[in-house]
Length: 370
Image (cartoon, rainbow, N blue to C red; front, side, top):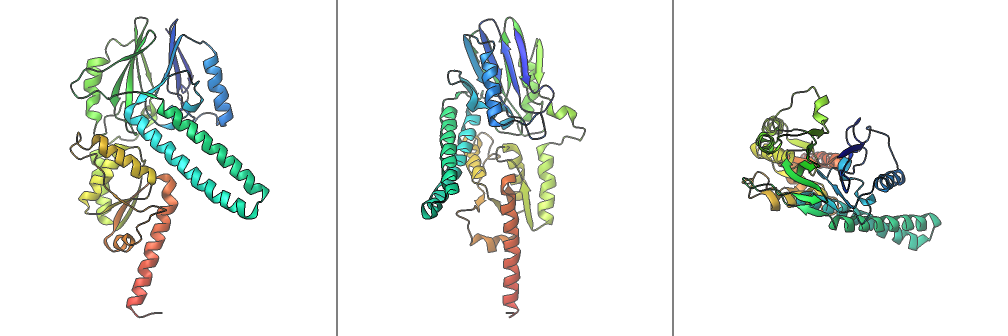
């Protein structure tokens, strides 16, 4: 067995690890570099790097296996050769398809606007913009096509034996684990009489983290090599459980009338903490992200029953296109908790300005001021 860490051993993210035997090889993750970690590259450079990796040391049996759906682990999937199968958990595949579907929709809306303007004035720059957008939409379609072809595994049910799959003479067994994104996995990789345990971080501070020690005790035995990303190893701050995070947030939500929480649309456990905190503070929960709306629907459908409602999400949606304007006076009057992704910060700030301006106008109208 040969292990080749192409990238990720001196940085967080951008992970690409190759494990090969005489006849087979698997790649664990094919990730983009995170901003501020590793050398920043263009898509052209990323494509060339991936092509070089697959050009060298070819084997009869090959595959790429993704531990989870963060871009620093899966972001270069579209550069993998078409004849190489790619594997990910069922939930990870679903949220990736939702993400790239919304990206394509956004590009199509932009194309329609630019196309209409171009048809009206016919400027050369507008025509070039249309061409670039049309090319981008084609690339979006190709990415979605590639994602639909991903092979998946089902998460092992409680008290059931884990299911393995093989790539040539390499055997892979996924184990569900706690991470800052839904449907993340540790991997047991067996080949040439050796056992490798591959994981990101060892996290126990989420609602599903209680399964970590039992899983390690039962299956991570007689391990020859440990490969771990170890993001948490360089952090000195105390790591508290999500229940404590939720309790602290509930205190803030109770103290302030208007609360905006920045959170990832794919972090099911943190979203559950926010939801529970808002419930305890007797505040209505709102979101303003189409992607978050979609991921919450996925989480609810897949996890609500098994989690006894913890992962059931039914927030009110105030988005760009179909904002519930009548709800805004209610939000101003009763207060709210608004979960916003980083990309929606500007929208959330504008919403605040609107609410306070509306309140100012209502106050002036009550006092008879012009």
